[in-house]
Length: 209
Length: 292
Image (cartoon, rainbow over all chains, first blue to last red; front, side, top):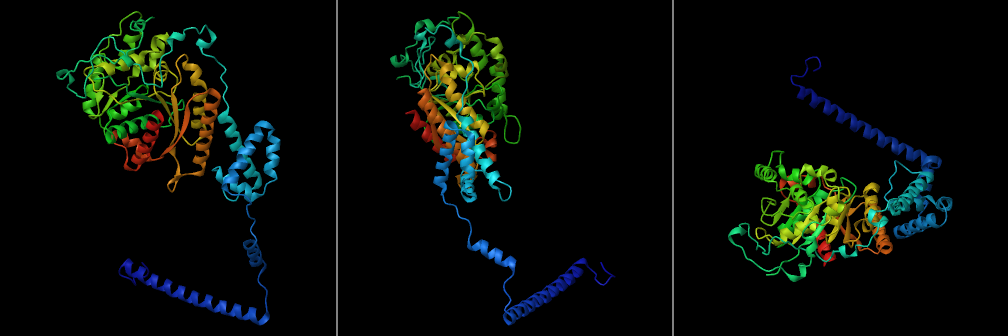
């Protein structure tokens, strides 16, 4: 609190806020007046617009446009990935280098690539190459080991059981099936097992091991 | 009355952390709550994520009812490990009656077989792979024929993120292998491994249908982000290629589950978060359509 002028901090705050508001009004007036003078001088002496302003206008007027849409971008990516397999990585890199930055940007966007700030052509190409690598790796599969059953005799064809058609359910210890009841002990309903699920060979009832 | 074979679905991915446990739980919850189906869930992962999540209440306190039941199940030697132990004994009758001492009732229509830590050491205890391959099939036979249990419509398995003896037993007899993937390279890579290796690994059993879907989808607005879409396309491409080359039945589902922090609390809070209900219902519709 300054010099005990104000009894409460709130009073000082109110005063300062008022002063700031006055200063802002003054600056606004000055800015307005300066703008008027500038326009007057420009008109009087026919001053051309500044170079920087021209640059901005030029950029806005003639932006480099992409020549492909999202669907085409993905198609190009598929073609590049195929080319990587059939030709070589250098060819793919060359193809990417020959494309314009806006086109590369579209492809990169569709592939979900993100960059910090404005990406360079090199960064865009590198990102797209990374995605091509991912596709190649995701499709690659190298089984260097074989299961025992493949290495040894695989003649136990009779062990094939049904699958994808429902599980074979056979239980040798019971011949009854319960209804939906948690206290089934009191409410048993003995039934004969269905012939369609009763096809586990007897030999499997006792473990063969 | 005929014995109805329930449809069996195994959730698996060799990559950890893709959401196998949460997806299994959420599907079990949605199916048992919004359809007339009775669902049985198995936790076959020795990490016991699903079992532990069920054992905890919201806020981290223990679910006393489940805890007491679980301890009693261990004392009575009625766990999944005990069942396997009895099954794998040489030349012995598989004497393991199943009832509600083996299966825990979460709700009227959603039942659960928990995991035990002993499954970690199962591979050391059981030497003969062939001794285990029929285990799940025979166990499900007991469940289907038990007078003490209801007839289940669907049986869901939360599998470990590796090809264990139990996974082998499940995958060789289930109707559908459900593979959740995430929008990143490593989680997507697991799909290719399963699709291209499983057929050879589970022979002579035929490979079940395989359904792959995007889990933990990053969204912008209500759609997957461009990056997620990239991985969705790539995994779909892998499925199509594997189906063609390996002559297997693998499909990439159009349904996807968005990434939500709240889903981790779904099990302890006892329900799928409201904003995930529709995605899981859509996924289930696609699953049943694919199964039929």
